[in-house]
Each structure stands twice: as structure tokens, then as C-alpha cells.
Amino acid sequence: MDDVNEWNKQVIAEFRENGGKVGGMFEGMPMLILHSTGAKSGLERLNPLAYQAVDGGWAVFGSKAGATTHPDWYRNIVAHPDATIEVGTETVAVRARVTEGDERNRIYDAQKAAIPQFAQYEVSAGDRVIPVVVLERA
Image (cartoon, rainbow, N blue to C red; front, side):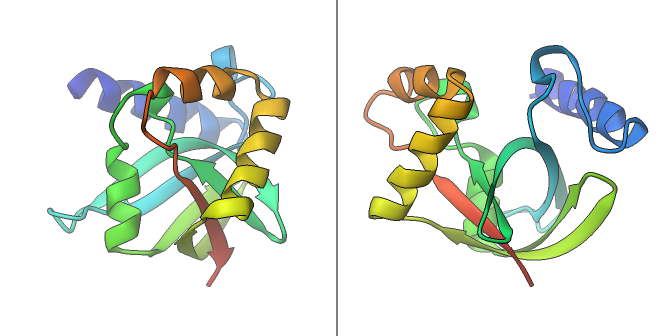
């Protein structure tokens, strides 16, 4: 967990230093920083996430790099859907909503087409359906 937190801190620092851009494996990928409230702790949690622009909002994906369990940020956002994101140089209050059915599939299919690694995440996740969460301006 400490390695993940340290890695996230480095990505967040790079994001903030470069006006919302991150290099390396994230070069050219739309990224945002999700500020959520811990489901159990109640503490603020920050997670850099790839996103897809959708209907005036942002879709984020609970891929957890193809793990068979949902990421902590997903459990946090389900428990506390009011959150904040940093996107580019803007900070935006948002409300999260978990997509289902055709909406979820349409958004995830577009993400796989744009960033093929998301297709591999789906395979690696096994029976777990990767959640697609839409963040809409509050």
C-alpha cells in the first residue's frame, strides 16, 4: 500500500507541475485527480485517474489495473458521492454516479477503443465487471 501511495504522490505532483499533464506510461492520456472521502476513515483520499469526457462530465474507471477487486476509491465514492476533481488546472465540485447496462457498456467500449490497455484490464479482472463512474458538476 505504501508503494502505491508513494507512486500516486509522484503522479499527482507531476500532474500539478504540468497543468494536468502526466508523462511516462500516462503520456497523452486524459488524467484527473479525484478527491474522495474515505468510506471507513472519513479522511480525504487523492487518486490520479484516467478519464473520458462524457456529456459535460467525466467518466472514470474502476479498473485497478485489471485486479479482481474494486479499487478503494470506488468504495469511497459509492459511500460518499460528493467529491472534488482536479482536471487540467481547474478544481471542480462533482457528484458521482455509477453507470449500469447500456450506458456503462457504451462508455467502457469507447475507453477500450481509445486506450487498448483497458481491454486487457477487463480480461485480467475475470468475473469482476469494471465499474464506470460518471462525475457530474455539482
